[in-house]
Amino acid sequence: MPRLPRLDAGHGLERFRQQLANVDALPQLCVLGVVSGLLTGALMVGFRSLLELGGLWLLPGGSPEAFEALPPALRSLMPLAAVALIGLWMWATPGAGRQIGVVHVIDRLAYHQGRFPLRNWLTQWVVGLVSVVGGLSAGREGPAIHLGAAASSGLGQRLRLPHNSLRVLVACGTAAGIAASFNTPIAGVIFAMEVVMMEYTIIGFMPVILASTMGAVVAQLVYGPDPAIGVPDLHLNSLLDLPWIIVSALAIGLLAGLFVRVSRLGPRLEGLPMALRFLLAGGVVAAVAWWYPQVQGMGYDTLQATLSGSVAVDVLLAVAVGKLLLTAGTVACGIPVSIIGPVLVVGGAAGALCGLAGQWLLPIEASDPALYAMLGMAAMMGAVLQAPLAALMALLELTHNPNIILPGMLAVVVSCLTARQLCRCGGFFISVTRQGLHPLQQPLMQALSRVSVPAVMERRLVRTQRMVSREKARALLESEPVWVLIERSSDDKPVLALKAADLARWLTEQAAEEEKRAAEEEETDVPAEEAATEGDGEEKPARKRKLKEKVRDKAREKSRDKEEAPPVDLLEIPGVRLELAPIGLQATLSEAFNKLNDSMLDALYVEHGHRPKQKRISGIITRGAIERFYRVED
Image (cartoon, rainbow, N blue to C red; front, side, top):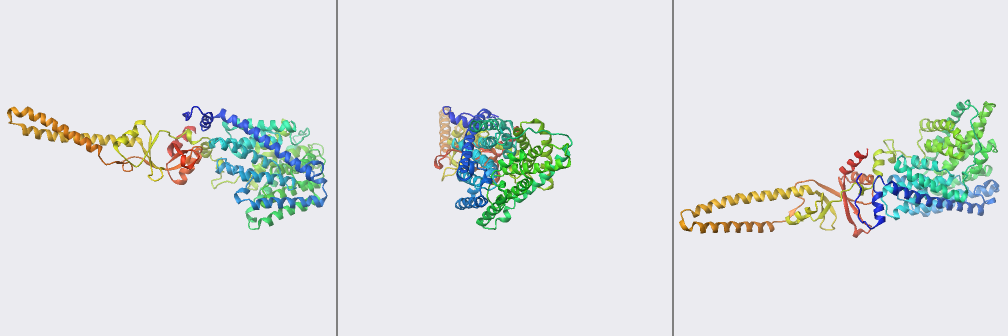
C-alpha cells in the first residue's frame, strides 16, 4: 500500500487524518482506541450513577433492582408510568430518531459508515434510564453499547477523521461499553468483533482490545475489580453430566428461538396505535410484577440469588418463561429496551431448572444447579445473539474457572444449533439479505470499508473548461497529469474526465499532420518558383533570394493561422472520457464502490472542504482503481 503524500506538512492533525486513510494505520488506530475506551468508560460510569440515583429516589435501599421491596400496587404502576414517559418522548421524536440500541449501532455501521445522529443518542439516555428504573424488563448493556459507540464515533466526526477509522471507533465504543458494564474486557472485544463488526482482523483487534481495557480500568476505579455478577466456585462432578447438559442446551436453544420469534412480531403489531402497543407492553409487565417482581428491571439480583441456590422453583419458572416473554413482547410492541441483561437472567433461571431436574434424575452424580445456571447463561446468550465465542468468553471471565469451558463449549454449540436449525432463527441483531449475508459480512464490503478514498485516489489532475486553445491545451500537460477534468461552464463542477494521455496523443497527431501538410505545400511551391526563374541568366540568384523570402512569409502566415485556429473541443477529442459524480474525502472505498454502482458511473471526483462554495477537488477515483486495490489486498 503506497503512502499518501503530505497535503500540509506543518499540520499534525491533517497528517494524522492522512495516515488513518490507509489500511495499515495501526499506531493511529491504537491511539483512538485508548481515547475511545476512556470516554466510553466515563459515560458508562455516568449512566450507572444515574441508575443508582433513580434507585435512591424511587426504590427502597437505593438499589435500582429492589422491586421486591415495593408494595404490589406500586411496583405494578411503575411499568405503566415508564411506558407513558417513553411514549411521550417517542411521540415528540421523529421516526428516524427513535432507533436506539445495538440494532441501531449495526445499522449505522452497515449503511452510514458509523455516523450517529445526536437525537438518537439522547433518546437512548431517556429510554435506557426510564425502562430500567421504571420496572420494565430491560438491561443496561444496550445503552452502554449505543452511548459508547456513538460518543466515540462523534469524536471522530468532530475531528473529521476518515470513515474507515469511524468504523473502528464504533467497535472500540462497543467493546468498552460491555467491558465497563460487566467488567469482562475479553468478552467486550469478542462481542464487538463477532456481533457488531462481524469480522476478525489484526488491525481491528488491537485498538478494540485497548479500548476494552481502558473501559474496564475506568469501571474498576469506581466500582472495584469484581465482575458484575458474583459466581461461586463451580466444577463438573462427572462426565455423566454431559448428556444432560446436551439436553439442557437443547431446551435453552428452543427458548432462545421462542424469544427471537416473539420479538420479531413487531411488523404484525404496527397496525395498532403506538399508545395501545405501549399500554399492552406496560400492562402485561405490571400484571406479572404483582406476583413476581423478579421479572422487572435488569434482574441481576435474581441471577445472583439463583447462583447461590436461594430462589424458589416457581420464581425460576416465572423468570425463565415470564421474563423471556415480557422482554421479547416489549421489543415487539416497539419499546427499544436492551435485551442482553434479561437474556442472561433468563438463561440462568432456565439452566438452574435444568440443574434441579438433573439432581432429581442423578441424585449422586449430578453437578450443582449453579453450574447449570452459568451454562444456561452462556447458552442463552450464544443462541439469541448467535455469538458463541462472545458467550464463552463471558462465561470464562465471570467464573475465572477454565474448567467450565469444556461443558460450556458443548452447551453453547448445541443451543446455537438448536435456535438456528430447528427454530430457523438467526441472531437477534442480524437481518440477512437475499444472499444470506448481512452487508457487514460480505467479504468485498469488509475489505473496502477498511480504507478511505485518499489511499487509492489519483491526485495528478488538472481542471479546465470544455473549449481551450491549443496553446492552453499544451500548457495543461506540462504538470504531467493523469486526468483532465472538464468542467461545466455554469457552476465549475466537473462532469467528465479525459485521459491526459489521449489529449497529448491528439495534440501530437495534429502537430504531425500540420508539419506534413506544410512540407507538402513547400515542395509544391518551390518547384513552381524555380521553374519561373529558369532562363533569366544573371537575375536567377536574385529570384532565388526572393523565393526564400516568400516561403518564409508563407510560414509566418501559417503560424499566425495556427495561433488564430478555432479552440479545441475536449469533448470531440478521441479518447477515454468518464462521467463523474462527487464523493467526500472522508469516504471509504465501500462508499465509493456503492456510489459508482448506484449512479452507474466509472469514476468519482473527490471533494475536500466543508463549505459548499469553497470545496476543492483533491483527486479522482475510478472503478478500476478500486478493483486493483481489492485484488492486491485479497
